Length: 314
Ligand code: SF4
Image (tube, rainbow, N blue to C red; front, side, top):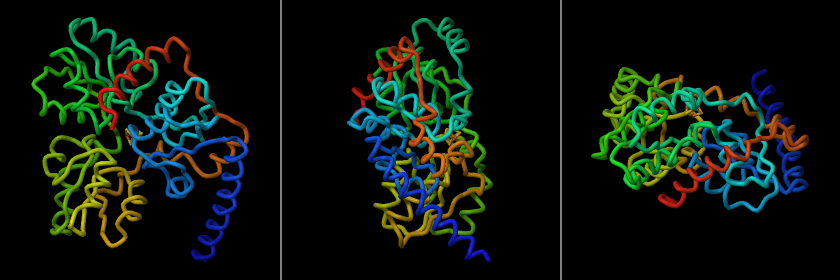
């Protein structure tokens, strides 16, 4: 019965894939997918990446339409970098709770309290918030970005865990916002210890959005791209993974003979998973939902994103 259901699902996905590829051609579209997307979406994507790689790709593309499979702020970044292109997302409910933890009003208050500080925003922020910041960064370039800023005082938004992690590598004063990623922040020391007891040979590899006490137990800490590279190049065969479950697709593709044990069954971002192949097809059929960013907001946010791309191009 289960095998039959699986077979039906595969057949349905094959039909959707075919339709999607046809629409992609008709629309002159590119499909960009985040590493946390469902495997069937990663399979059809033209480019799979983390926030940084996707922002770069969005800036380079010559396609007329960008179908951005990720969460809302990522689609906004693509639109900001490509104001003349049509940017669509599979489901407008795909938001990021961490990005929603900072708003313009709150940020302006903190800026007023620290008039000499410059704001560094993790790319996981809305366009409105980016427009209030000096420079954006991602987990792969945060340290370089912080050092590039012409101020010894930094207001950091919104992820407190990543903020804490990067603050260890700078002498600058960091005023850290209290946001967090629900998916990474719930990973506990106990989760890691239980996995280490079960797989004593495995290396612990985590994303810096995890809590400091979890990061302290890791053999490697890095962005999603960093994690993929580390696991691929390592001579070790077993890894305890402390990041979102969607990364399994690429980890297993890159290293089919290695073993990846996810440190918790809750390492699944429900927001990333609202996107489905069917919704991708519908989005390319209707060119909806489209991302729209008001021009004055886009201009200010673009300056912040482009500063990042200049300072840390890769
Ligand atoms: S994994 Fe965390 S930071 Fe990424 S979209 Fe989900 S909630 Fe936001």
